Length: 361
Image (tube, rainbow, N blue to C red; front, side):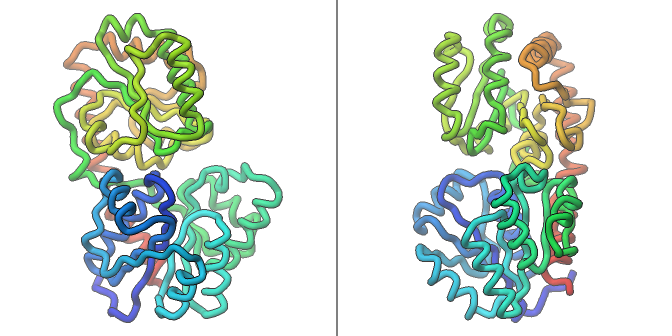
């Protein structure tokens, strides 16, 4: 697609009140790639410039192709800036009071907007009635809506009058940055926020059941992330005397650990697709162990993926089965994962899709 004229500048608005999760990483990577041929600006709320760049570095994201980056502490100042900057399109994700303000004001000023629904509970309708009403209002006030989860298209249309709702065409990551390195005996679970739905507790329970095999094979399990269930997980690891097997380093820079891991766990209670962490792991040649929920089977192929019930005994058996494989089998699975990422996790399809949403009529 030819470069859009400079007058059609667009903005991505993010609240970075903590370390970046998958949605933030995905959108920053997308817009940085779009910035190679389009006029894009990044608007940051929730932190200072220094803190943002610190969090960005841990998130493994580049911003060299953004034409401008603006920082705001106050909501009113940020809103006024967007109103008077004559953006062609403004992109925000998920429900919050400020995004509702953006949607209302931009609809009044006839500025196009794009809402991405990245929280699975919104897409699956797993919300209280008052949240549903607020979500419906946000959808109706947005020009177009993009939803990460295939199941979300029909649901979001059913609770709103907006018919400009479409599904992101798969996931993507930076397949050049996330490449396999010499593998170590590491089994990895990683989530920016250790929420209950992420289900890391299942892994701790499974590790307790197969701790003998893990110790005999000299494997280390890492559960990366912070907040929410973090203290409960640490307490359970201590209760089961798993400190020599299961380690919790907090939020980590993914590119420093995933390329060395042999296995990546994605154990969500609702859906593992389209996880940015899974895309990063597969790109690094990790074997996948996923709960068989939602559209999780789109995360990888049978050549390198295990899909299990939400059951600690079943997960423990799968871990033991993997540990029993010889190095040749493990290396073959790793190569299959990398081939899958090169074929399916490129950014190109997503770029074309978002170009149509953002600059299309």
